[in-house]
Length: 294
Image 1 (cartoon, one colour):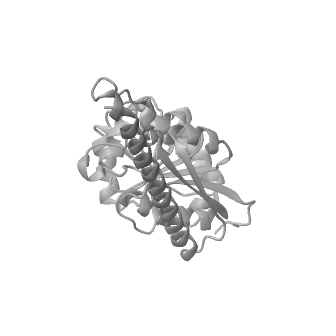
Image 2 (cartoon, rainbow, N blue to C red):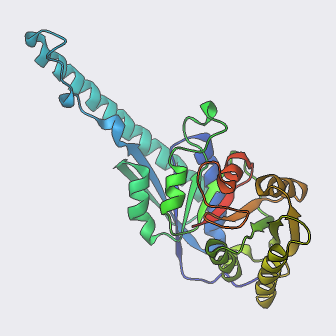
Image 3 (cartoon, rainbow, N blue to C red):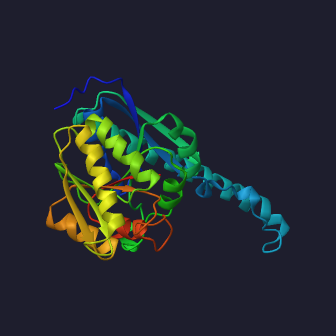
């Protein structure tokens, strides 16, 4: 196994208290220990829940004499709501910290902001080496076939590796890189080769072609294989044929893959990240975490 004596790195873990978020703590702890990293836990109170009663115009719906009294009551109610939300955020952050420290993470920082998650990720993510968040949020039980409302925007704007976690947790022993030769996949491949994260793990390398004789796919796979071998990796390689989202999912299940690695933007048969694309389809349907590179 390669030496893990690297400078301290920083992981930014996003939580909203959902089941997906709580399961992401397991993976954040795993990452932190293998990367010698600290973990910043971020909870963002949605700014839309903090709108004030003063912004409402009630003068046309009730008598003028009752307007001031009612507005005062609404303001008090919303202040109480804000206090409860702050208490909830404090509880969730402390719960995350306890889970991480119990799992062996020594350096944990808690961050509570009010606004919009995407905005704060752009600000706080600048100093992060890796971002972790659940695939779905608080309403996951009502939208099991959809991605979280912020996820696509985050993947589009994030310039760092982003681990999108699944509902279930399990130890990571086998990882699979779905390689299409794109710039984002090349960055991801280099990350695998340089990082201690993947030392002593079984690495699978796959690409998807139109046939077993697809010359571009064969050349693409050979290019990636050579890069791995130059770095003393011996990946398990295969050229798959068919629809990428179907074949990649099938391969993961057959080979009991624990972590899938994807370029968030691609070309060839693993295309750009837009709703309906291969990448989004894989993120929707996969039951394992996905590490994505923009």
